[in-house]
Image 1 (cartoon, rainbow, N blue to C red):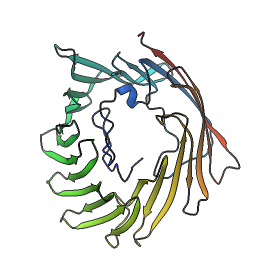
Image 2: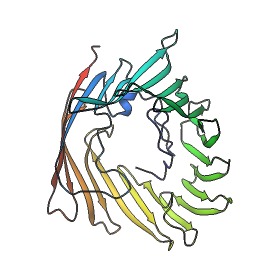
Image 3: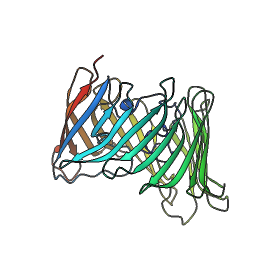
Image 4: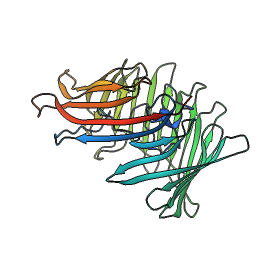
Length: 339
């Protein structure tokens, strides 16, 4: 889900945490980030899909994927194996950890399980990755460095190509609790490309994008969850920032899809959950501005003693389906470390 409060670029595995205006989920283990609870040692998943024609538009995800189908973790919840077993062949990554004298992970290497080639090397700091190198076909491709403030919130992300030239960077300012106050992204030439700010005193979010001449391409403001202004350069096509999602109460979100005529279509998405941690949605319904149901998904679970699901049945609905229709049935075997 690309949220108004989370308009950050996609992150590679375990390199960064999405910034939100209400705080970051810092210091979660890899297992927890995969939606798992308890001392999980391994997960093995099987998904059986139907041929039902169901597709949702861009926006909040109504059916979450299985984030890690076939994975293994150490006793601390750090991922050691990540991928998917298909017809007897494992496709994914094997992770090698290097610890310092105090037992803390110092380096993390990801190897392609099929080719055995190195794909990524992470240098680990006290609160997260400080440097990441990406390899393609076993050869060095690009590099990123990450900085953190005194509270452990990520405040810098710089990327470079194989020659060492900058490909862009993002600077952020956060409150002590992790709430994002400002995020500014720059292109390879050091020019500001987009910026988002949040004022907690007035609950105001402001977002702006710029062209290569430092002129505004798009800008909008949301105050207390309500869109108060939207502007886009005349004649411009759909672009980053003209669709966004704003939290609207417990389990509810407003989706804004804005157009070149400066009008915005508003829809509403609401989730109901089985658990307090909101890992297991029972339903997700997407309605238009008048409240008419447009899309929906519904879930059934079998859960174990750690509240991890071992069987999940997913039903969906759209106007082309006469009734709720089975989309997929997922099962997974979970083993745990002995405590």
